[in-house]
Image (cartoon, rainbow, N blue to C red; front, side):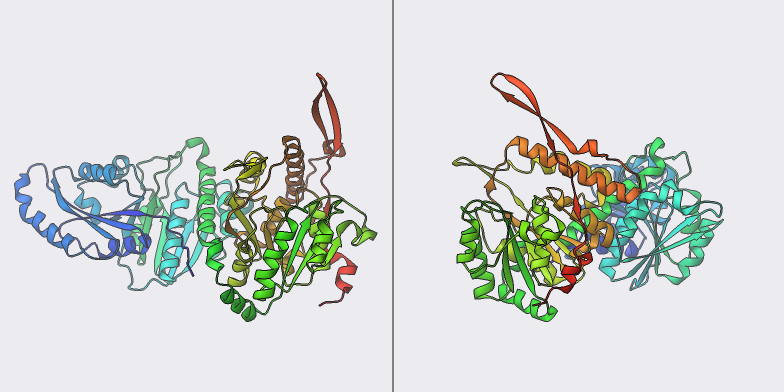
Length: 603
């Protein structure tokens, strides 16, 4: 089974200097690199009044020290040792050549060896850097991450998460504000707070203090390492170390890593940048750790053993409307592989939306129970839409895990189901899985590669990035292949229409957090294209759904009934005219609130 870990740093640069151990810096570099690369370069700085030739013995010493690191996995040695009256400029040239993700320097020794002040280093080297002040313990078990919302909080968070995972250490964030401040309205921390709330591996602590540096130094006694972003005065000065950082580096008895990123800081956005940048850390981490691939779960006997160990039952519901051309092959492929040959599925049902073709007859002939959603729970009224069928499929199924796939898949394969099931059987904390795939479209008799996802890219993705950026890592938030645990799904409202996919995603995120959602690559899906008018109506309903979710989040009304009609421009017989369609987005309540659902016999 493949595993995927977050690797935020593919290349780290560690300069070594004569007479300096460099052990702590190398330790941090290798812990951060994982499957990346640590590049070692030797630098010898000679004062201007001395001849460079006097450095020959030091250069030899450096070559021997660097050569001793040869053969260490992931370590690349630059054989040439650079000797200069201006070692800082030599280091700048190496950085421009290597383009590392992170430069590691020891504090304060590297700065003295570079013959430069921190301000000179910061203003000369335009890259992300971390200053390591040891001594580091042999085993790092606990990390403290002081955060106030500085522009460098993103990089400090990224480094802390990577080190905590590599070292199997606990990670505690420490949010500090002045005694007179209000936690709830502090602009510089608002974005970071959203990020931290979705990282359950971080224990959050919030305090009010007059002296931030003294508070950090005092609390550092209970941990093995402090990681913090440079604290810069406001207005921000790119070359400033910051008074708090300076005091912590000099006074803290615990090891410290002080971090500066290479992101430009805009003065007018200084208080907002840390949160917006930290979102990328959260999304990158989620994507790396919870993006699966269908072929990881191709061993069906292994999946069956996971299912038995977890002690769950699995239902597959197939929503359908006039799919006689494909529904039979979909059922035969899935039922034969995942129910008859290997008992991964405990039931398959067809949830039909009053098809006028042979869809229901085909399913019944293949031994699959058929339900018509308009005739299911009729006492609650009849609504059209796929979301209505999905909601009512919870009522007619009994599995602890419920999966849905569309019945118009031309290239159907068992991976469309076992790919969704795998992450749910692998990790109990995963409550919901979305499928994604390459989407070549069948247009007539021809296949157009990469032509799909217009509503996703033009509507759903911009909306999620704007209002729910934590969900921006979903490759295809509107895909029709997904599933989850009944215990979560039955507690969520279902949009009755095209808004069901994005509505479920938002509600799951709001209720259970980003870590409850996973996605899986189902490789390729071939389906039929929809006309532009249909996509326009779909987009209109999706926008309404997001607006309703924002109303629920913020408690103010955005939409009135007048917003639920869509004027469609038609062109017929040489003239334009308008058609008006009522496309109001409506929701069904959580299924667990329906008495008939609670009273139904369990199979």
